[in-house]
Image 1 (cartoon, rainbow, N blue to C red):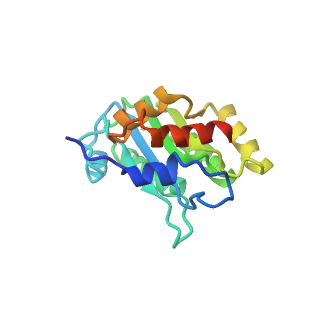
Image 2: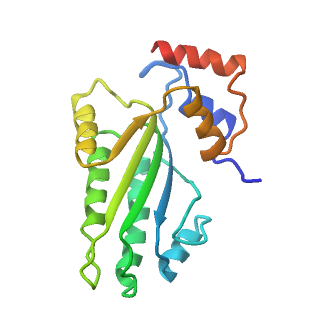
Image 3: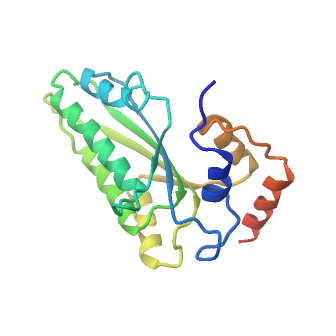
Length: 209
């Protein structure tokens, strides 16, 4: 049985909380989960992903990243560094000519802030600007899904979320019980009763926010 990436406390306190932004109970940390899919394997990149529990570049396993508050690193910053490390491996492999697409699925407890939104746009551009020795290019398919808006009242945050969509980054928000059940069952592998009184209590409050 696969070990869950989060526990029940993580879920209710960091992701599915009923608090309003800036009020008591609103978490100051961010949980980020990501999954990368590349069609062609390479020894160096395979080794890099293997360290995160993946056996090849066809990585179907979700990886968890938390923000580093001690160093002031947002979770997105850490993700971007890990993806750039992978790109370095791909650039060094002269035999890797057949890669045409890199897919990155990202799930966040918060929507990206203004700076992180711009950094994710730059990451997508960086991937698509990689030119291999046969002059082939890579298409980057990036999907970002989040549970809560981060400082939605700040114009810069919303403006750069919109810029993400203009850069062909798909944004979505968790919506509906089926959405949450799919996240629990298939992403984090966490067994929670979505029909429990506790879950519905938080659900009703979130719907009124």
